[in-house]
Image 1 (cartoon, rainbow, N blue to C red):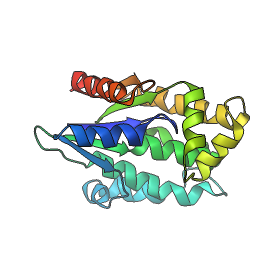
Image 2 (cartoon, one colour):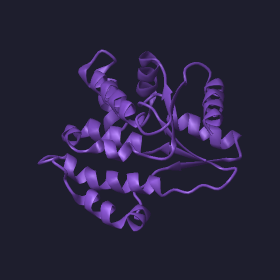
Image 3 (cartoon, rainbow, N blue to C red):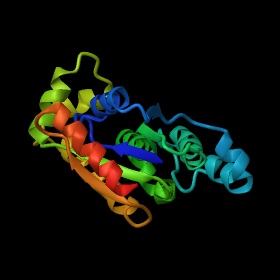
Image 4 (cartoon, helix red, strand yellow):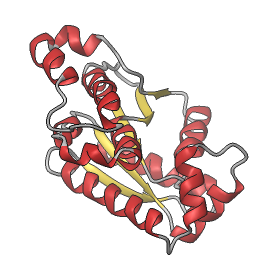
Length: 202
């Protein structure tokens, strides 16, 4: 079984994924990387769509587009062994949200096609105040986390990130099974909730 995790920064993706891989021997944790395997399996469509700017136009979004397509095609090509849970800690939903957050020009691209995946999507959610406190406490913040932490939950940047994420999830729900799980409170209890939700969807 293949399960993709998704969640806004501070929702606990990395922590939950690490704990599940540590406590559940059947869980194999992975971060999705660009893969040429998808192009091999879908040569005509893959090559064209991964390099076609699709109306993105000028701006910083264009260089990100081919990598998004390589990741999306690579995720579709992932196989799994019986009795094994392939846990994508960062899948195409994460990378698409991040790219669109950093490069608003990508909203003009046909990005919805990237979210059409055969795998289960488990969305981690927690209150904005908790997410913010987790972001502030991070020792090494990337560009996105720094922007969100500086904005605060009432800021325009924070609100834009939330709205964009919900837009992506609404699109994903049209073609795949999606479940939302709270990761607030005790970490072990949050991990158990994610594991139960994953098991119920299998």
